[in-house]
Length: 327
Image (cartoon, rainbow, N blue to C red; front, side, top):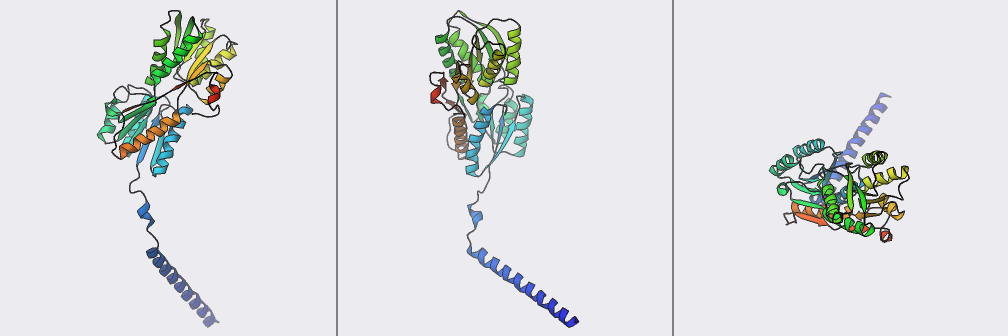
């Protein structure tokens, strides 16, 4: 009996050795015949860090997705951070990415005057910097800025507004820390204040957020301030303004103007609750940003200041736009 057990054990041992040897020989044979796929892999994966003013605005999601589409095609890595409208937090996040050794930064600044030191640090480390959507106060540390023509957006809206009203008490919903918002407001005012019968009766900083704009508009209504028009730096603020007006049955008495042409605002334009908005093109901003990044990586010349044209949307031409998505 012991001899039979011993024989079986010897058989299985020999079988195991033979199979293992066969597998090793097969692996070595085919590894020499098959192409070396590692030769086709990217030698250096670039890391691009993005830090947006706030991801509470879908506008930045669309820009980011558009950039990431190209980065994935190139086989590189994309890191995204949300500053949540906190300039100190944005600076901390940018410093962290710089220390991690990113190759490039894409930044939508919370505060256009707060980033000089961190941008200087990035430049010293040889990190490329592309600013999107809004400007910084010192472009010396920036390789390129890509944004809508925000001043023109305010101008175009103001010109249309003057065709709709001859006399007005005007409320401004602003975002004072963002250069893009300041430019929009200034462009609008530079046009409409040519009419001395238009008076600004209130200026409310809502940081471009619906949840801030809505209660501030409610408080203004409750204060008894008389107004017939609300100019909003963006469409999140415009939607908040419409919600406050609707709660107080004032939507037929007050005109609301916005900037962005988000799906929500285009629907409200179509319904007559927003008088007009200005279309930004975040998909195009994202594509252009990605193009600039890879031109910079390849040492090709780039424009240092790129402005994406904007377009007026009213009920007259809303049919030319898709209400369900960004353009």
